[in-house]
Length: 270
Image (tube, rainbow, N blue to C red):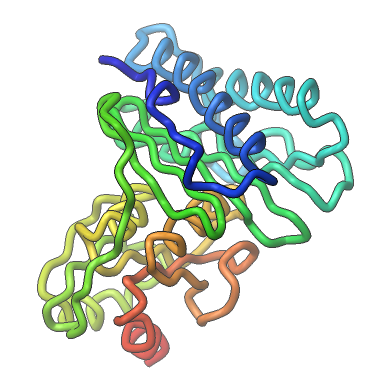
């Protein structure tokens, strides 16, 4: 599989001030892909259990350590927040990294996992990259620069959310039923179609216009959602926490095409 998606990225759709940051983020994604794909479906992959009983692999740690080293060399004054090694630095410019979103899929050989990379400036996420090499896809966005996707090394295309206006016509995606056992049946009954595509992919499908609603109700860290925010927003969608607040530190994520957002939040609140 050709995972050299960086080669087809074009930067004429962004303003100059963050071009270099986006280039760095895409370089980090390419570097992460090389590491994660080298370990994916490996018979000798080392898997540990974290205190919260979630798995972590040597690939998770290697990716985060490698990306931290890249940031240290290229942006030494910036802060870094990563899922595996916490926060370093205290700059208002902070890189936010989830080395492998979907680790449970990764360790079982399911190809739905990705590296998430974001840059936040004073708690506003200004760019995000989601790279899923086993799916052959990479998504990215910069505020005011549009959202983009490249699949299997093809030229990048701009993302646009759907125009579905009635929740009865909407397609819903989620990760699992844990944490919203009461609200899930209400939302499922109100929508046309329901599938558990899961994790980052649900939200990227909203940005692509293939799905209209995606929901993860609980226990999300900022590294789980930061990269998703500008991609959904720049594709014309809306993303908030479960209660309608800001997503970055809200612990949950609800992404829609924007037209359906108020209806979805009402269903979740009942």
